[in-house]
Image (cartoon, rainbow, N blue to C red; front, side):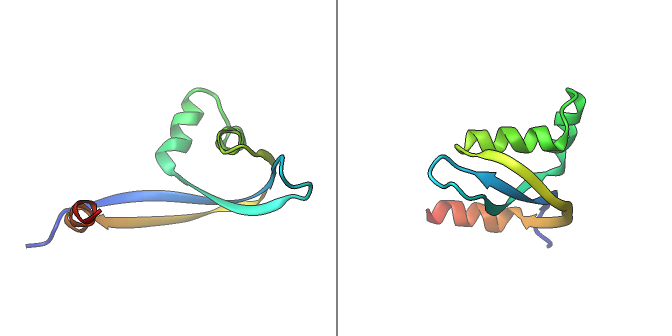
Amino acid sequence: MKNPELTVHLRRFCVALKTPLREEEIIQYVTLEKSQLQAAQLVGESSKELLQRVAAANGAQLAGVIGKAEKRTVALDLDKLWRQGQAE
């Protein structure tokens, strides 16, 4: 019997961030679930505005988005995740 899977649609953004500790910009990747972007759009927020909020929540300021988001769909084995959670 095949274990149930959860399919997740991801978007990975390359962003430039400024932090209070560093004067220069750092390049980092932020991965969001597609549904997070859709929810932001429902309230009139752009993907850039959502990324600004994510950066601010982590103590940084978004300096810019580099290129387009990479798209990937992943399947998660729920039974395997359950067992990993029990081991921790």
